[in-house]
Every structure is written in C-alpha cells, then in structure tokens.
Length: 334
Image (cartoon, rainbow, N blue to C red; front, top):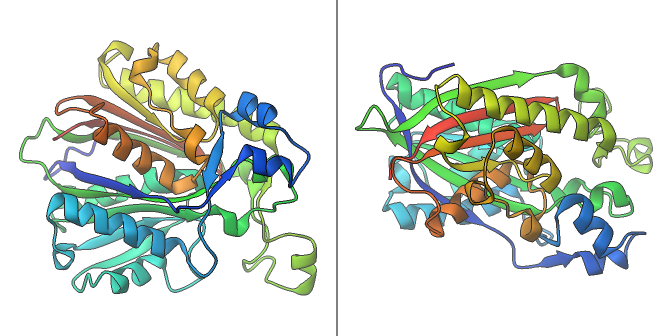
C-alpha cells in the first residue's frame, strides 16, 4: 500500500544501544547441551548482549534515544508521538512508551506500544509514518526495544541460543522532497501460525499462577521447523513483492535490511531478489535475535559505516510470531 498522501515521511536519524554484558556461544556450552559450531552453523550467531537485572526495555530505549537526540540535535520537547515496538514491555501496563516519555522529559508527546513480535519495529515504522503523512505530527519517534533475556528459558537449548537484548530508534519527519522517504509497505498476518511461536503465560488466557510458572509458560515457546519454513517463504515473498511492484529489481536495491533472526533465512530472501553480499547487512553474529531492535540496529550500523547514502533504495523486511510479516521500501533521505 502506498503512503503517498498529504506528506511523505522520511527517516531523518537513527541510533541504537546495546548492554555491555556479552553472552558468548562458549559460555552457553557450559549452560546447555550445545556447541559453538552447532549454533554458528545453524544460525550465524556468535554472541549476544544481556541487560542487567533491574533494568528494562524502556531503559535501553532511553539510551538509544539520547544518542539519537544528540546526533540530530533534537529537543525531546519537540517529539509529538512515540510508537514503541516491543514484546517485553516493562510491565503489562502502562505502556513502555509512557515510561520512556517520562524518562526523557518528552512533555508534549503521546504514545503507545505495538506488539507484533519480530515485526514490532516494521509495523511501528508504518504506523509512525502515517502520522507524518497525514500532517498530524511533525516529529515521531519509532522505537524497537526488547529485553529478550527476561522471557528466555536458559535450560532450553532450542531458544536460549537465539536471543539477545538491545534497542534501536529512528526519527521520522516530513520529507521536503516527495521522491525521498518511505515509499511503500506490505504487511500481512496469518493468525494460524500463533501456535508455533508464542509465550503462553501472563495474559488473560493463562494468568500468572504457581502452576504457569512451574510449567515455564512465561518463557518463549517455538516450533523451530514450522517457524523456519514460514520465515523463509514469508520474508522472501514480501521482500520480492515490495521491489517488483515498484518497478524495481535486485540491482536497484542499495541495501537490504532484514530482521536478524537466522542467517540462512536472510540468505534465502536475498537470493530471491538476486542480491549480492554487499547489498545485504547481516550483524546477527554480534547480537543474536533482538526482536524489535534488529532492524533499527542494522540501519544504525549501516549508516555509520557509510553503507547507506542519500537516494539509495533500502528494503526493510521482517517476520515474526503471529505469524506477522512486513516489507517496506525506503528511498533514503540523507
């Protein structure tokens, strides 16, 4: 669906933050029955960052936002809306967006959380862009932040090897050039996939009890085979669709910025579009799957490394529990 309405939204800044503590594959070898070679060959992950106890998703988001404000010269009071993608909110309510607003003194901003698993940032970006497109906001913060270590069972070798903690954020503003900014998006949901990737405890269906805790219902459950099959198909198709329906081909893509869940999934999507290695950013080896934070982190590192330049076509793609899927076409504005 095209976002070419009253205004064009552009990404005018991006930043990320990760905790200092690192959990390596070698350390995981001592915790569960696995090996560095097994993890690396199947996922591409070498290490992940872990947030300290007593800190939460909004704390990481606040650190990322401070970096963004400094980079862009933005006054927190100028932020109109906060769209916060996360599956690990500080608490069930109020929204982490509210807590972030208070921590950074964004007195004029209102905001809310978006729960779309690993599509949390992509969905939030589309939502945030529409505030700019409609003219109802001038500056929108789109956040992706997850403390995945808080919902991981570190005795389950199938899931504990995958996830890490991090935060990323972008600033959205009106583009002065109609040809630059967020051009198009494609989002889908297949609710039949909910059974394959979820955290069953803690909601209204299975509220917290001694029994739900004993059954480890407050940690991630994943049917790896079904999730992998959907991810390969879903992200590959969504990525190719957003390129093709805008009259582009793989050679036109400046950079492909996929959700960082598994290197083999990324490779499949890149191959579907006919991309070369230098057209794809992969940083999963350093961070693991940070859920809503993977895409803004990858964008931030790509910009810092000079891999994205003004006028480049950037394809963002994600998949996640739900099942959710998203692809976004951006023509970079700075």
